[in-house]
Length: 411
Image (tube, rainbow, N blue to C red; front, side, top):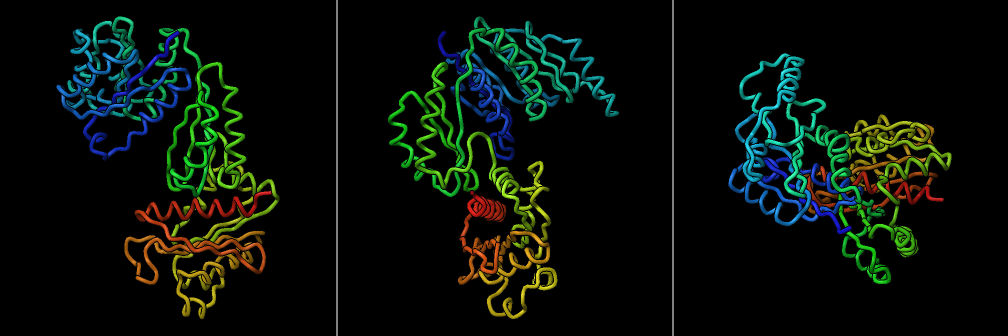
């Protein structure tokens, strides 16, 4: 059977203008790939009837599956039902089922049922309703000749529920010969995208049937590998060669996180850790405590933001602070050593730095961070200079600390 292609259309001025990050399209693309549908295009359009209709018509001209996200609400800028009906050449028809659903949701939250709310009960004639688990805006599925058109809510939790429980069964029924497209991801830390590409290109040239893509987020690179159905045995050898070439930088296979790897390694080693954070404000601890079972290795965490806290809580010496300043190799080491000793942990982590946007100097610029890991009387302390916003610097420092722990505890 020929490959099935899809186009995802995200709608809304807030999405187009960047005020909302479109995580919906990314999630939907990933899940479509898993069931054997190739996302060929992803388009974003604002709340403009004419442009929305043009985008919709273009999608119908080039793919078998068109999925819209958003624009199903009660206000005048929610255009999806109207535009879809116009492009498909159908009238909008009232749905008693949707009407009842809208009234019940509004009654539950004691919200008056205005006429504008009931706009959500009209759908293109001949379409099938997709229920909404929690919101008022139901979606719909419609066939256009041999093409499938679907519209989903723009609220992430609602979209996922609609997609998994309702849209996917329609897709499998409409395209019964769908095959899962084999794929796998590998996770890397500390490499640039160009460096990773240079390292893997000689390997990938030997496996032309395997396609790849790469994404980057806060110093973490995700390499995605995929191939045609029935050729999944080609991915394993590629991963084996990449792991052999980049063993130190590759920290996981599949959708794993640095925090999960570190928690597993530290717990498996029988070691315990304690953390003292300054510029990251508890972010490292938050990432670790997102992992179930981390209580098996994490004893405690403290945010010692002021000099006084570093002195009283961790035993950082006043003369060290006076001589070197709070953002220094010496203070980071004393923070790591202090939290290790006061907590009784096997390892202590200390982080101090300047997250910005203010507070930097020529000698100590914004982005300067020291991270220290103490296992014995000679802590390992490394200086880093990160770039980006305050949030970027905090996240990059926390991820780097995780990677230091990964390398330190690796057996």
